[in-house]
Image (cartoon, rainbow, N blue to C red):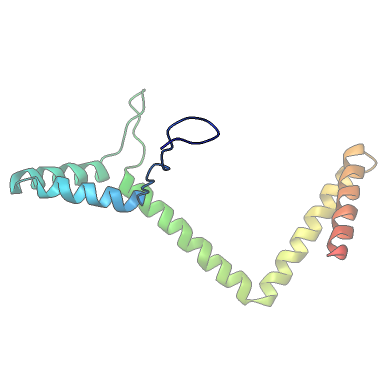
Length: 136
């Protein structure tokens, strides 16, 4: 079968198959595990645990945190952010104190720039932002 305009053989578009990357990884991992005997599985598990608890070393031989320690550090940091957010968002007095501190810090910062081009640029940017916010 040929195309009338080009004279070339007409071919349907190739079949496009898409795989979910995570699903494909799980499928391959399951297949690999099913190919192993009990001793091989134990060796892989031992190696994975060793990797999780071993601190990697840089090219100078200095150790950093292990993947497991890094994961705990991240989890603790996220929990601290959540608790701090709950404290701040749940207490109007804390919010007012923070607002005062920010205003005071900004005022000191602006006074230290008194009369400079940088101060003028910041003021112009603030005015521009406030005007844009009013237009919303």
